[in-house]
Image (cartoon, rainbow, N blue to C red; front, side):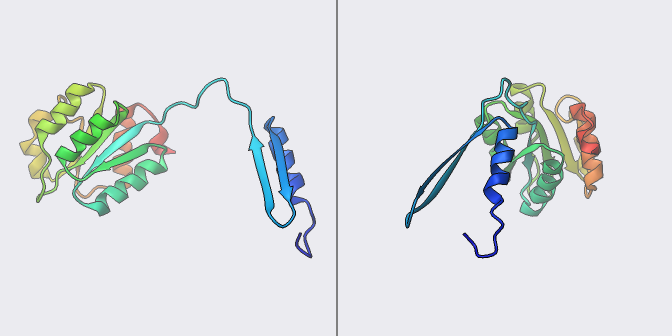
Length: 175
């Protein structure tokens, strides 16, 4: 009820709802307000579960950057600030984590035993370790058994997404 309104807003909403085989229910009480309820039919199949990544870093800035990159290609993201927190988060996630991206920070190094435990709990989980070349050389024995890919720090979003796509067997990271 705006003075210059064309009155087509509700008509447009109804057309969209009907196109999706839904219904619209409107209750209006003068002086009180209006309640609009929209109902859609259930689908036969649930949407496929999104892959979930656990991002581990003591740096909130790095976690946010990695989150943005992974979220941008459709991965769900949960975070932890340490190896110990990551293991607890992984366990509480109910086996929904498909990828771990861990930052081996020089001040708070990643605990390989925690990564190994995560891999033992879910052998199909993929692990990417962001680290310096020196750390990569010292942890080379973990490659394949615990760590699937090492990425140098700093790395670009595209380097991360390429590694994720290769490990997850998808091209989603390239879209």
